[in-house]
Amino acid sequence: MDTVIIKKDELEAVFYKKLVKHGLGPEQAGSIASVFALNAADGILTHSVYRFERQVEQLDSGLAKPGTMPLKVAGFGGLERYDALFGLGITSAIFSMKRACELASENGIGAVALRNANHWMRAGYYALMASEKGYVGVCWTNTMANLCAWQSKEPVIGNNPVAMAMPSEKGCAMLVDSAMSQFSVGKTMQYAMESRLLPVPGGWDEKGELTCDAQAIVNTRRFLPAGYWKGSGFSMILDAMASFLSDGNTTSQIKGVNPLVETGLSQVFIAIDPRTIGSDGAQGIIDSIAKSVEPDCRIPGGQLYQKREKALKEGIEFSRKTWNDILAL
Image (cartoon, rainbow, N blue to C red; front, side, top):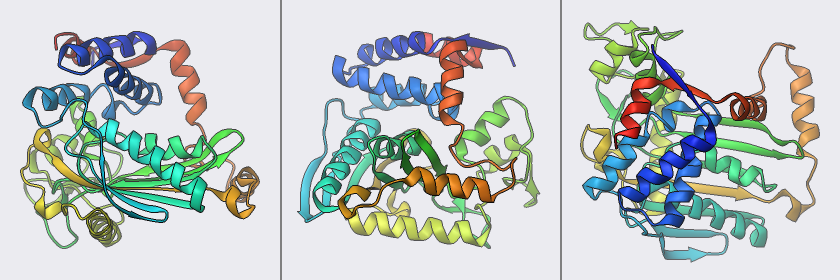
């Protein structure tokens, strides 16, 4: 695959220019451009450069409403419910996690349930927002039907990504950001674009057989639940909880098969402030877990900042075609 290497600052500047061109105000464009660029620097290309064109298409189609902020519709104590009013997913998610942290500082734990939201791109960004301020961060979203329920070969449930992050004095020492599919839709599409096989089976082909052929899975949309029946079960309960808390849509009510029109999502953002109950020193707990596993085992998220620093110095490598497509927007 022909690639380019682009510095993060240049990437962010181009994102900003294109977002303003397609209707965003300077402040909102700057915030969203920063998220897209940082996701790319962290190596999450599937939810940055490879999703940026879709973000612009949502703006142009009117599915994402520029300048719209979540509206509070209910709340008690540390729990609040908001309507995103179909605003941009990143803007609504940043607002919601910030509010959850504010509620946590007052109550020890804060939760914001959001309905009528758009795609937020990378779940881990919002969990990191909380952890970098000293909170435990948890968030998840439902999605359109893009995952096969266990014992079914039709996509009837969502892959419903969830992210959890622990705080530490080193920044983020532990982060899990995972869809309920064995591979996220974006990662599978990236493998297909790069003509690579998945390392383990990620879905079913047209013959109904499990396969590592990413393109075959993209064609059938028959993605495999992570952990088989376990991922299927987690998908359903995350969907139910998000819909219940937000009074929003379930996956079955989110219509369409085109990711461009994936809208009206239900999301949950939780922050826990350990300082309110005298708990601190999460780093010691994380270090003890790290010491208990084999030296070559990877603590989830443990290399995040090293990877980011390397990308900031050397640039971000991705498809030249994608870069040209972004420049042409």
